[in-house]
Image (cartoon, rainbow over all chains, first blue to last red; front, side, top):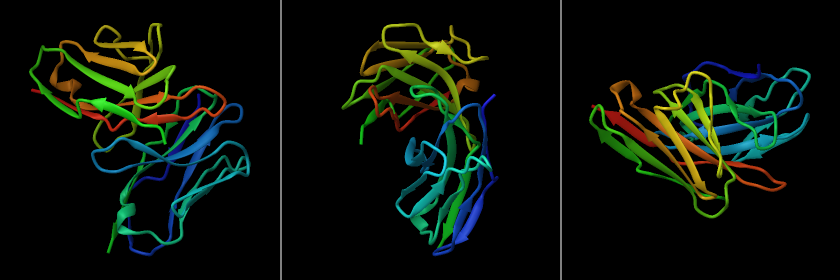
Length: 112
Length: 116
C-alpha cells in the first residue's frame, strides 16, 4: 500500500543553518504531496504542497520539489530560526477527498 | 484559511466513563471529516473517516463500538470514547475536508484526553 518514509529525528541545528528533511514515498498513481508542521501541543498546519511532478511548493522560506523519478519530496530551508522548532510531517494523498497518509514525523530543534 | 475547532482542548476523565469530543468547521462546510489519534512523539494514526449523514468508515483495528463517530451536520462531527480506559489516553485530532474543485483538509488543534 501507499506509504511515506521520513528521515529520523531529532534534528538539531543552530540558528541560520541550512535545513533538509528527507521524505520519500511509495504510491500507486500520482499522489499529491504535503508537508505539515506541528508545534508543541497543537494540531497540524499545512506548510506547503505539490500536486504534480516537478511542482515546487514553498511557504515561509521552506521549499520542497515533487520528484517523481526519485519518489521524493525533501523539505529545505536556507536559514532556520528558533521559531521553526517543531515536528514536520510529510504526507501524501492519492485521491481528491481521500485520506492523508503521514510519515513518522521529524522533530526539528533550532538552537540560538 | 479555513478554521477547524475542537472542544474540549483537554479533558481528564475516570476509567469507565464516556467522553465526547466535538470537531467543528467554523467557516466552511465539510462533507468529510477525519479523526486521528497521536501518541507522544509519534505520527498521526487515522481512526475513521466520516461523511455527513452516513456511517463512519473505520480503519482496520479501530473498535467502532468504542470510538463512536457522528457527523450530523456539514459543520460538526463528534467522537465519543465509550467506557474509557487509561490506554485510551492520547491526543485526538480531527480534520475537515472542503468541498468543490479546490479540495483541502484543515486540522483542528487537537484534544488531549487523559483517563485516570
